[in-house]
Amino acid sequence: METTCEVPESPWDIYLRNCPCRDVLDLLANKWTALVLGALSRRPHRFGELRRAVGGISQKMLTQNLRAFERDGLVTRTVFPTTPPTVEYALTERGASAGKLLMAVSEWSVANFDGILESRKEYDSRVMEPVG
Image 1 (tube, one colour):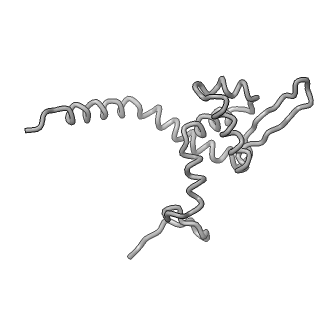
Image 2: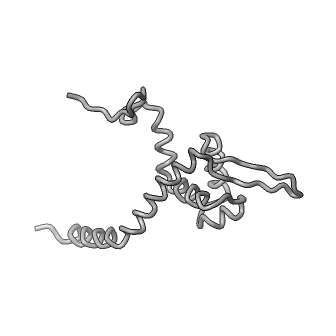
């Protein structure tokens, strides 16, 4: 008996190899997505301040991610008529719901980090022991 994990009343099954929903899963599973949407969940940001808020992200990577988020309806991009133009990024309702999920993962990561480090040390010490 084959089981699937389909969303009720949805034609999509993300566990199937060719399910197009996997593109969305790939986007959401990206560390930069969690960090950028997390920062935007606090408040809208201009590009430069968003880049500073997400330590380590390059300008190119931030630009790519923001374009993907805008394309998928997660983020709005508002241009204000100033000199030079001011651009602000904010979460849409869809982006806010994704942001909540990703913030939960981020919080879990922080809360469990010490235990994970301890597990890694324990595992690594067992793997490094000589065999036989």
